[in-house]
Image (tube, rainbow, N blue to C red; front, side, top):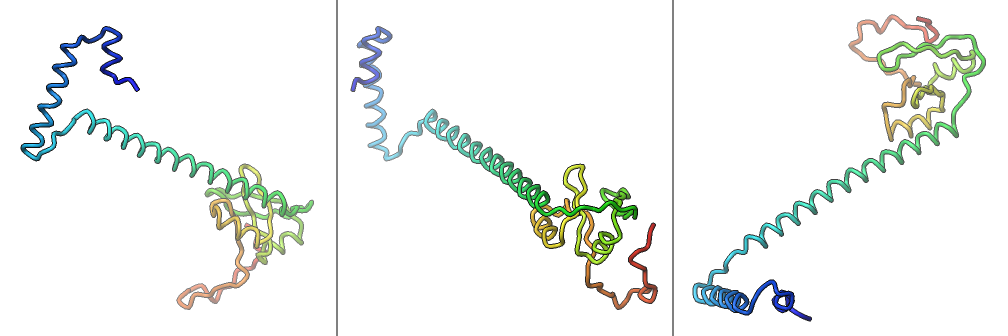
Length: 178
C-alpha cells in the first residue's frame, strides 16, 4: 500500500524537502515524548473523537425517538383493531345517554337494553378519533392499559361507599337523565 507521503510526492503537491522536514519533526516529537515520558496530545484527533461521540449520541437519541413513534403507532393500531372487532351497536334507540368527554357533555342515543348494559358497567364508551364506540368492559380494560385517555365512560359495577361521605344516605338513581 502506498503511503500518503508517496502519493503527494507523485502528485507534485509536496517536494522531497518538505517530506524530510515533516519526518524530522515527527522523530523529534517522539524523542521528546520518550525522554519526558509525557505523551503529546493531538488536538485534531481528540476533536475528531469528540465529534464522533456526539454524532453517535445524537444517532441514539434519534433512534429512540423513531422507536417511540413506531411503538405508539403500533399501540394505536392495536386499539383500533380491538375496537373494530368488538364494538357493539348502540341499537336504534331513542333514549339519550349523556356522558362527559373533554369537559363537554356528549349525547349518545341508545336502546333500553344498551342503556341497562352501560349503567351496569358491562358496556363502556370509547372515543377513537371522532367516533364514539361501545365495547365490552374487558376490551375497555385492555384499551385502558394501552391508552387510558381513549376510555371515556366506565361505570363501576361495585359501588364503593365512603364512610365519611355526608351524602351517603341520599341515593342517586342510575337512570337519572340530566
